[in-house]
Length: 222
Ligand code: ADP
Ligand code: ADP
Image (tube, rainbow, N blue to C red; front, side, top):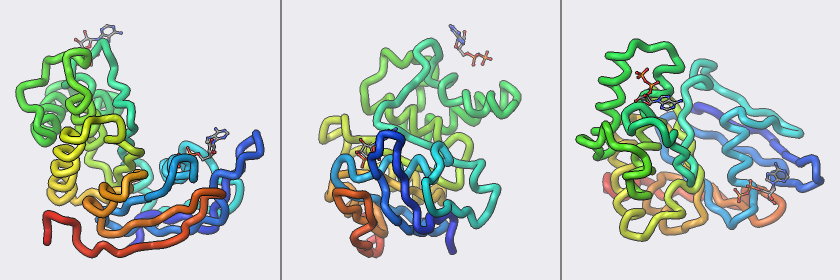
């Protein structure tokens, strides 16, 4: 069953750059799909279209369930934590914006921090955290609203190899436990094979889907 899809989507920016050319893609409920391709092929643009952060020049973005659209989490390569707020306040922020009472949002944020392996780090400030831990906080902040769709844009690309492997492992576990649908953008073949059930390969330029590969089950389930 489809959660969200793009149909014949093209994106031409004001400067004339054609970032996407006639891309069609369905994201299925509960799957972990990677979008793999070289830098500049339009992967971020595709994610931004799915998130509703930008509009296509041609084609459509279609949600199967309109409520899904409101429940999405986004994780970028830069964790973009608020420096003046503790880890727990950063994670609780999306709940605060939704008007949730303080005691409940703190409880949920603490649980989300525990889920990403940061139990005990609630009152720590972003500047005290390593890159991998900042990424974990960022992931907790995206997951705390229990989104239907988690969009990840080369989230681990700036991290050292060991940290990246640990995060890959933990992300798969989170995906299995939460049932969230994940679209994971990467230029790493390793990451896409390790993490996903399905890989959508994008050609260099202009951005087109050039292949779709089935990986069957991701590593921990095999
Ligand atoms: P990727 O994520 O695969 O690296 P992007 O989607 O970021 O690719 O970019 C695709 C192409 O569109 C690139 O050539 C990029 O420079 C261009 N691009 C991205 N955003 C904009 C923008 N806002 N204005 C103009 N060109 C852009
Ligand atoms: P609360 O959960 O009490 O409503 P916030 O979520 O607004 O608090 O903030 C969490 C933490 O960040 C608190 O320690 C608060 O003092 C601090 N904080 C929030 N906003 C700012 C700001 N603009 N400048 C400095 N510190 C802030």
